[in-house]
Length: 330
Image (cartoon, rainbow, N blue to C red; front, side, top):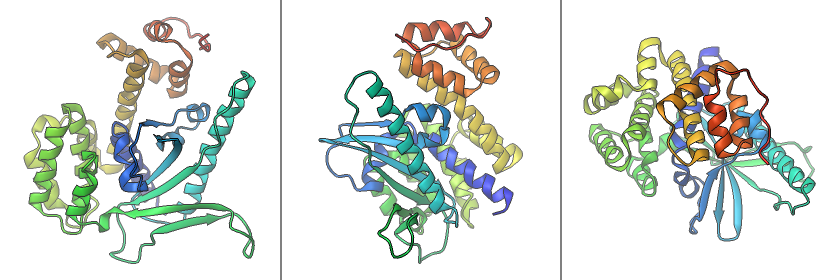
């Protein structure tokens, strides 16, 4: 695969992870067919995710007595490496669960039951037909019982507008994919934008509108949809949004990389706010960004996981003091 294609694929994958993160309940029903009432959804946070950020795309879903880990892989197109990528992430997730269970046993507590990982690959472009519904990666020899990973394939670009709108019944997140629909027109784009604006806060709307714009660039006739989005979304949204602004200035690949750097900062703000159970002050946000660039995301991830709320707030504001090793909270 050419370097620029790989960069675009990886960039859009990370962009969709960023855009989907505030909408965990958007994924279980449309992608995994979970119809029973969902009690809780949360992105998987384990000891391994602190070291392997690639596994942060897994969603823990609790419904009834079941606890499942759902792994979503976003890809511009199916390629020869998708099978091993899905297998790799399944392997990493199981390693993460095993490491956590081992730590629980050392504390003398009863470990959770072994996790089961279900994977879906969401494909954004490709042939009009012939895309399989399922894929697999086999580790056992031919003739032996199957061992490896099987996964589902969702070719969302083959969906009609009405189908995507139905997927958005539980979460408007899916409306960002309307530009990829086989029968998309200007009216569908306008309808999607209006639904996003009335159903989300300003910050979320900006990210989703910019995501929709970038996905429109994947279509051969995407310019007309890009024009509609640009004409319907205010200048403050499209020109000031990190993804759109950097993408227009330096091209999609470079723009995504710069945008994703800003997105990483926003994601860390969200993680700190969840840990502290309050919004960060302007000074705290500046300190967080300073620590991110000085110490890197792994040190911040350890702080979020290991420090209590009060100690985390104090640690965050002490960014100009000598670096100290983060200790696990008692």
